[in-house]
Image 1 (spheres, rainbow over the protein chains, first blue to last red):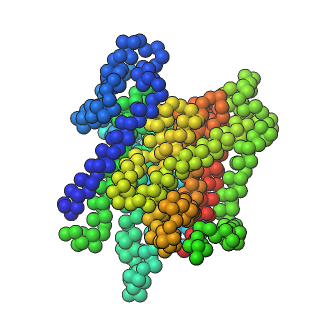
Image 2 (image 1 turned 90 degrees about the horizontal axis):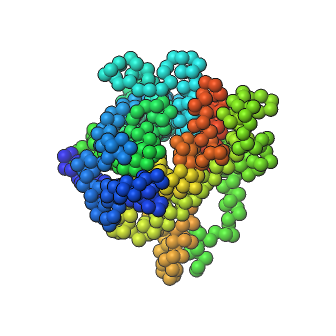
Image 3 (image 1 turned 90 degrees about the vertical axis):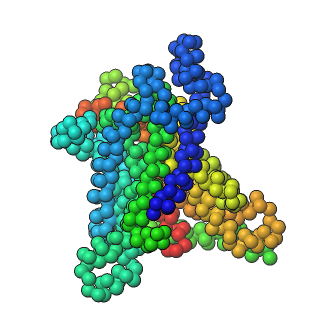
Length: 316
Length: 292
């Protein structure tokens, strides 16, 4: 297991390197004089010179990249032009907010998606199955930012049950924290819940056709045990893959959800950065989201080991 | 001899009957047909917008600000007194164009890379796929936002951003198909007959890899429409005063309690169009799936 993990971590390094190269190359897309684009038309020549110096625009590309990546590896993502704050600590303060939201959304998707998918597979072709299929397709097709606006309209504006926006830390006020998190978590988790339903249903249908499930039934094992122990435990791999690899999609979706619900997370930070021409912050968030995906792929591999005893015996 | 070699690609003599068979399979799928009808309706709305829209979508009317839906304005009016129905109809143009153009960009970039990489194989394929994996690791929407931010906010740049962000998926799929197709006997036969590699790539591999790529394209249009709406919602897509469903939602958000219709109808339009393309993609997948 340890050897396998080391092998996977080593394999992730080139991917991370290429991600960093892609992210850094983004600034080459800035049209015209990048210093002018960042500083704006009203920037003085001194300010433009400072921008060129700070971004290293006068250096060759690879030298610029080397300076940038060595700083990034030390947690230095640069300084905000507008507020003069360091981007690294700003980002570090916002990551827990987005992680809380993404984790809550993941919980929503698991709690809704897995049972609904299992039941759809058990009752294949019946009313529930059709309802799940329609709900899953709708969940995939609905833009989450619109769903958010509609939920605000219903639950905050009309019914007044939940706050329309904002974020409260769980450690400051647990009740209010949960109240502010309910709608954003449902909005962000809806798409993944829909995908989870489809994958769980499909994985369960495949497993339930296997001989060992038929044998378990023939032996007289209770149907509940057949479904949960024999079938579901063997259908876990595609579900784990989806849950872990879609975490990156949740982070991306958080950009819109945080915008709709005014949550001060990484997503809102990146949108604000775009409009304040804080391109270093945009690069930082893009890089971190790519790195998060690589990390989640590693986690998926570890979970495969836990879920599948065959893999454990093969590598031990 | 050459007839047997070119059979999988140049099945032109059998094409009409094959197409009819596929069409029959597709039409039998009611959900897919429903998707086709939805997409068709929105295409008609987009193409004939000037004839269908009851009002000028960008003409402001200060005496009609935020009026609720009525017989005159079926979907109500917005914060500048513009007719929401007309803007929803014109908005179909931006959304459908963004969906189709960005997928064309993704297809044009991704498919040749994938096919060539899979065909050449070896170290070249490994390096290309590592780069593709790195692109795929960056969440699609964050990549699109970053690209749109660096390129500047406009519909054209949003389409380019979405196209580039979607290209790796096409490269992966095309490469996977190529790996399967290139070991087929008819490819070997073509080699033996001295067919040029470029001809093999285009006429044999691309043509046979096309069905799954078509399915992916249809589903990618749905994703691209949502992405364009998201970028416009964030202010990175179609710029005012031109109509776009995403920017309409953004404008409606600030008047949610006063004029909810400003947010409701553009969202329904996005949902229906995306649903239509998803149903169409699923239907095409089922029709083209040889296992079924």
